[in-house]
Length: 52
Image (cartoon, rainbow, N blue to C red; front, side):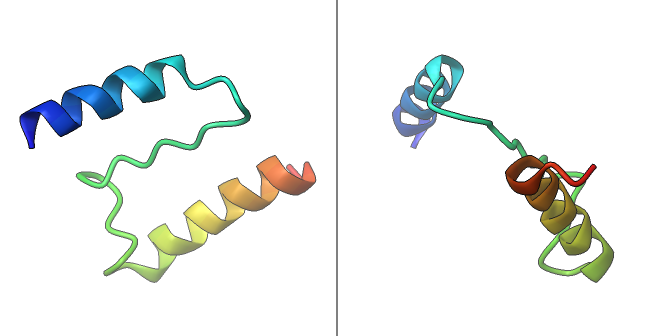
């Protein structure tokens, strides 16, 4: 698992294909909190559709 995490971190650091949304799951409990889930949806919508 440690190596998988290292490979992921290396890949995501070099990711340039489009916008990147990073969700801190230690602070954002979107699976348990509808408000947190709504915040994520709003961020995605604003990136895709430029509403905000």
